Length: 182
Image 1 (cartoon, helix red, strand yellow):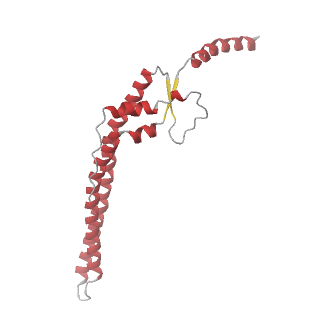
Image 2 (cartoon, rainbow, N blue to C red):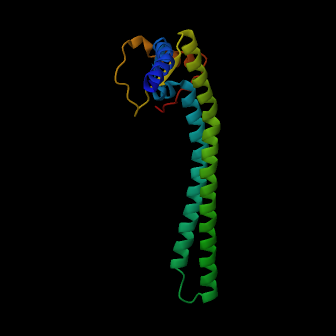
Image 3 (cartoon, rainbow, N blue to C red):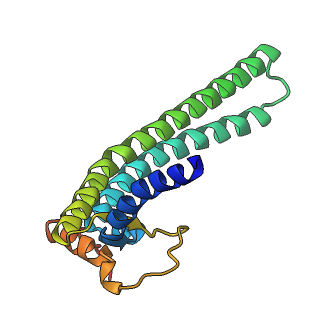
């Protein structure tokens, strides 16, 4: 008798839940495609690459200086005193330490800067997804980004990826056109 009562209670709880779930309107989106098609992402990437190029130039200069000092050290004439050799080696080691510290600083700056530039883009994408979902009366939006599998989509019209891309790019700042040398 207890089993029968438990079964009845479970059915009373599960049936409304299943009916509610069946009434849900679902959409799918490829967030990776949206991200890569968003024009403002290109602008942010260009800005990031310009800044990181300068950091790389600084590091290349420091590395070239270290290489030059090592070559000088290796080519010291035999008449140079041990103290002078030791001082040169100490200078090289200090430059290498400075180089590694600067490299780590730039790596940390790059991570921070990338987050600064991408945070507003992510917020805009989420807002656009929410707007399109509201406009289409969707209750759930599933992400079909690479790596995730959707086995079956009954209606192609539940894919809101293109609508989100369109909404994002309507007000997006266009990427500057690249100058070509002729």
